[in-house]
Length: 324
Image (tube, rainbow, N blue to C red):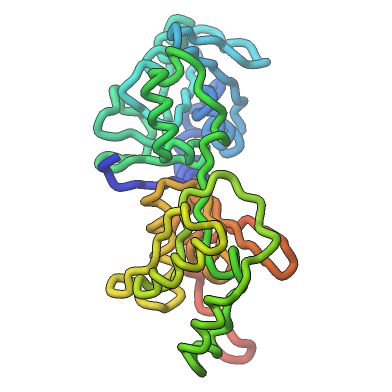
């Protein structure tokens, strides 16, 4: 995990498959085959882009057995097929599945969402992830320390079952607006010391969003506020939860910089979810960390909404009657 993280979203994969569409159609594949589970989404994307029927293989790591797991029959010998997997790794999954299809007399090309420095096989189609830790949306939990520990202990499922993915979910939460009501910015501007005293005396919310395991509180408050912030948390029963505050020398108090601080801190904690109280902040955080589950919690109406965002660089809008 010393490599920089390279998140690849469903949207990015969809655009990549679309860019390959002419080449894939030209190949006239008899079917596109996904290795479950990671290759399944890619096989379906290719199927929608080309009209080629999808099929699936199931791979058992414990005994390296490959099983045809599809309602359509294996294509006749001599047919050309496309085999899809999420990553061309250092293990046996892709090579064993290739060997299985070759035994059926099939001509096989490979498509993987990524390959990296340790890939045993270079795919015919793949995103170059050398030098990075590739992270896909269906394996966001793989970024957590507990998932990696379980993976190593079970040798990737060969020496015992892995827990379900959702069991590895880890949350980080905002502070103001989540645990306690936010103080309006104009109150800070009018009288900073009075606003801070008001904040210190504020009681926590009685109703909190539904949360899984909370690994940390990540706040936009500057580091200089640590003592009084920790005192409030301790007083109200949150003192054992790690607190990450903003380094004002690294991140200023602009919305963009605060969002960057929260996104980076959440990724460093290897959390899968972040709960934010401000909708604009939630959008900015989502842009910074595309695979992070960013949840906007509106305490006033006690409603949570999952946020997804990407930067849009569209053309300058035209005003009626004014030439562009």
